Image (cartoon, rainbow, N blue to C red; front, top):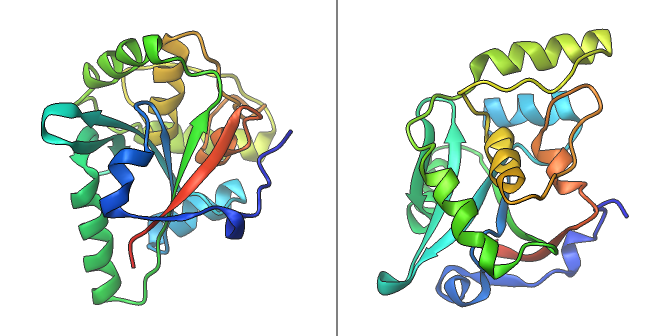
Length: 197
């Protein structure tokens, strides 16, 4: 079943409650209003412009986000810092971001370490700028196949981390994966929205 859940019916969770609600390997979906987000949303006809993987650092009760961003490539960032950055952008301009945590129903606790270790080993890999051009070409021509290199767009990173543990997420028939494709995976369910306002 496609992920067409009514997001108004999922619970809002404050940052202070978030650590206890999230499980390692949960997926963070992001919808922003900055120019790059708008371009991604328009190209993929989606509300989502970014995606990453959440995991906990137990001794310090820190919640981390593994993601790939245009200006840095693959990185780890505390979710608290991520939310602060969104709040700063909101103050500087007319800006709203939506953060939803989703969970893949087949993710097993014993697989999480392998998923996270694979992802952490990719930190500092470059962002896949060339893939944006390839996606545009595929959307125009209607042809393409999934190709791999050592650079990662955000959705490619999530896709490959899950693939490493034997879970193949939904991808576009033209041979790429976008945040929307992950959102539409029949095994991915929204569990909460982060109340960062």
